[in-house]
Image 1 (cartoon, rainbow, N blue to C red):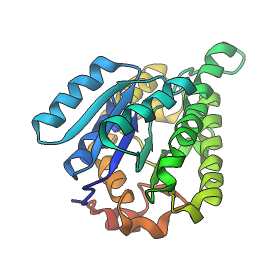
Image 2: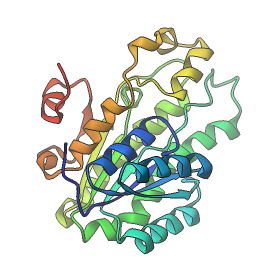
Image 3: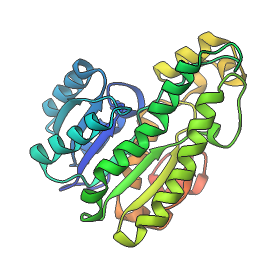
Length: 253
């Protein structure tokens, strides 16, 4: 287990799936964790679980597509626990799924507003804190950032842009001590996979549930990337399928 004592982490999209698992794992490693999502009630329930297990956590309702809400999130974090030192940009949506001509432009834009602008908003709002605390940013990436999939034009485009944003942020702020990572967790057993399965579009929808990893597997890698031991990997897009990364993070072969 990583020692993240003294660290203050914001996890977006923390009401379920990878975000929930990451928040619980970071808290178990000693970090003070702020769980942010549009569903405040779900985050509050998870926060109570973390506290019951001896951790420190706070739930904050936040829509990452709204910059004012994100700045308020960072301020509430500072008031409760001190300046942010870890930012997990996990919030994301898969919809709309379908062909470009059949889709609604407003739905396409909404995807980009969450998956891309949300990452920018959170990064910009937290950067000053991160710069003064040798901070860590982990942007949850995807194989879809590098390989197009039928029916996922918005998701693929947003994730590809985030991959470039990861590189740009690292280029600008590495000299300020900020370690920035892109991390593709592979296919994970979450609600998103239920939506994908129901669509019946592209090869991912044909996968069976048992082929997807449980959310605590990528959460373990996220905790490792937050530690100084992973500093040499900063500035890169990383995949959970990388055997060296898996070994370093303590995952089974």
